[in-house]
Length: 279
Image 1 (cartoon, rainbow, N blue to C red):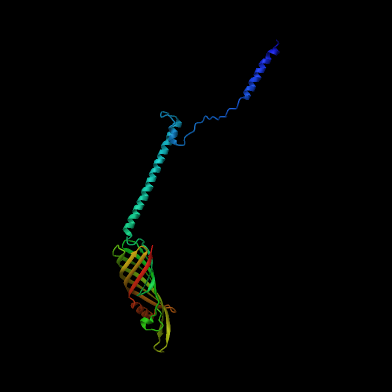
Image 2: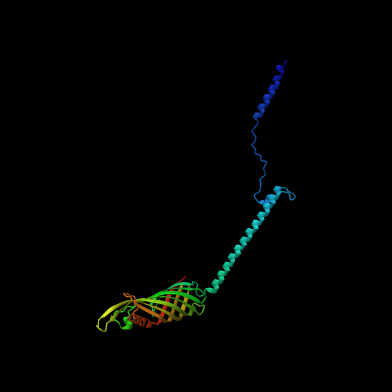
């Protein structure tokens, strides 16, 4: 047998092995990594090292863990401080409400209107219970009138506008309570009276402007229920300054001032009824 005939079986065997290998089903592809997943928690990373490990990475991991624990402790303390501050503010507000806001008035502020007699006979007011028994108030009022009613002069006009600020002291912490009050007021009016010349017997108009300052004392009763505010009071007005000037010459006029003073003195006593909405 020649060498050529001897190598043919070997070649056939190799070809059969290759064909068998190619006919085997494919295996699933697998991916492998040699990098371990590192935890995000610094303390979890530090626990991966042996307690006796003194290497630089182990020391860095333990230092990062201590820093994270310290920051967490600071955040917890800050949260406690914020919560304590909020509790303190709530306690202060509650104490202030109990100490300053009257139980009879759930709504300390009010917008009111009034009618009556005195220096003015109608107007509007804003009041505020700043303390348990103390009420501050600002008012603006007017009285349209003629001085002829007061001085017997023909055609005299003494319409007044008054601005005032005052206080009331409430005697009690009930819905229906008595009070005493005091106020400071400033009053102005455009004056127009008839002036008679005794030499000629003819009359002419004197146009001017009057002003006055006054202080008042009052006493009365107030009803305060939820959104409703009612009060009735007597007041006495003390006028401590009056002035009157002519419009054309801008100088004082004794005749205008006399009519103006007489008009105010007739209305020193008054009664005021006030009603409003509290909020």
